[in-house]
Length: 267
Image 1: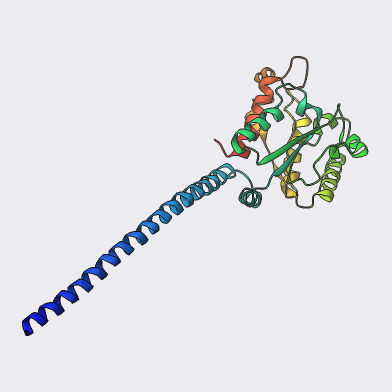
Image 2 (image 1 turned 30 degrees about the vertical axis):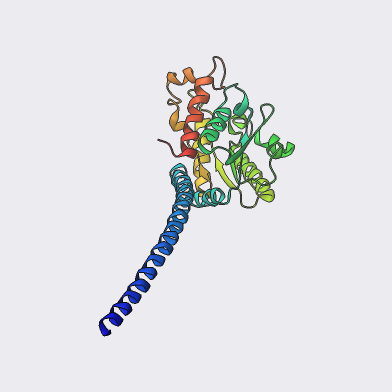
């Protein structure tokens, strides 16, 4: 009798243990399945987002590595916030004279690199103008976005050479920048020269002085002349239209190549 009772108790305990184990096993499978499913979906989503972000940030860091660090940080924030960067190219007529001008090449290459990150406008003087003419006519302010982040300024020095004293042009350039900053206090200004002039005497001195003035006043100077043949060399003539000082297609190409590499971080 006692043995029978013991057997019944053991069977009951075994049934309870087995039932509990079976229930927990089912519950565990369901929970684990749900966790795995959620984890898988979350991982895929997180991985895609992380990859997109990491790729974008790595690309941006690489692309922006040639730029001044404070500007690169601003552009990184713009990328992170999904904001557009408004960039204006301002200068003489040469910036848009050719069908394949350096500005059009630059815009195309920036679009290929950054998609729609940059909104680029070109403000070129309608004809040969000096820095005095620009100040009087307000040409530098025409058709510009009210909220500029970056300006690449080619400050009309070649057209002013021999007509306006260089120091006067520097004062005019200061006014041009001040008026641009009045509308856009945080705008980042780059300065660059126009195209080289074959065997020029005074103009290269103006360009070198502009470089020094830019650095002394905290503006980044874009030295695209480094991508052209030496202005003293006859090889430069292959980059300029005959009987002209205007760049031909090859001239615009080397100009665009330098600035594109600078802004996209390519070698």
